[in-house]
Amino acid sequence: MEVTVKIFRYSPEKDERGHYETYTVEADPNDRILDVLELIKGHTDGSLSFRRSCAHGVCGSDAMRINGSNMLACKTLVRDVGAKITVEPMLGLKVVKDLIVDMDPFFNNYRKMLPYLINESPLPADGKERLQSPEQRARFDETTKCILCAACTTSCPSFWGSKEYYGPAALMTAHRFVYDSRDEGASQRLQILSETNGTARCHTAYNYTNACPRGIHITKAIGELKLALVTGKLD
Amino acid sequence: MGSKRNISLAKALRYKGQASYLTYILHRIGGSALFVFFTVYLLGLLGVESMHALMRNWLFQVIFLIFGLFHAINGLRITFLDLSPKLMEHFRTAINIEWVAYVLVAGFALFVVLRNAFGD
Image (tube, rainbow over the protein chains, first blue to last red):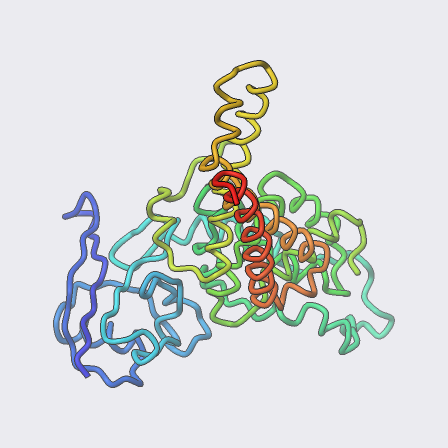
């Protein structure tokens, strides 16, 4: 099928503002948007820039706006979006070139959540792992699936409205550790989350839940953190 | 505290969210409608006569009802789900129920306003 692809283009050396360029390519309905972009880059316009790495929905490099909504280009098929496709960079992060955005603010917010295990207690008597039951592991299983693609954070109206808001991906990272039975840093993280730019800025628009390529129920995770902050109890 | 925007309002409104994003936008419009309504109401209490006339205007009442009622009903849905995060998995169903409730309540309220405005 013939596919018309309108792509946002921006080159800091040439453009003050971005512009759109339209390409027409032959694609199979089962091709992914990433395949279409590769086709254009390989055969029509080698200057087209976008991030990609694993191309299988695991690394999260190729999150972008496809027909107005955040998606992973490697997980979205042409047949799902139709023959007229508009591809743009994610909103809210500075565009570096074409579809590539500056992820630094995103990862800075991620780091603020102390994304590592905090446990000062001595190791168990056998000196081996800190064990947890399958039920304890299941408690935070969903939020471990995050691939840090930023599709959620850059679809969040609160993040669009404030450069200071940590964003849903960072809050989800906090959830992953707060509910980990082996971790002892919950109170530190909840203190960070209780600040102005923490959970209070989440107004449950659900854009990020819809945008998450891993199907994580982000709003539910943030809701659990909000409730923990109000009640002072994790469960 | 600062709150510099990452993107313009126009760009934000062009994002293709789903039904939940529509309710998010309508909630903000409804909040603004409530602000206008209470401003008019308070000015009326302070004796500004033209505000009384505005409060009695059926078009003003209809606009307030359409947006203000949505704000109230959507607010109830948000509060309910915020208090029961486990139910957030069913947010699409909750939004559908909310629309049904809104149509019923707003329909009845509009009927009353219009009947009062234009007689039996």
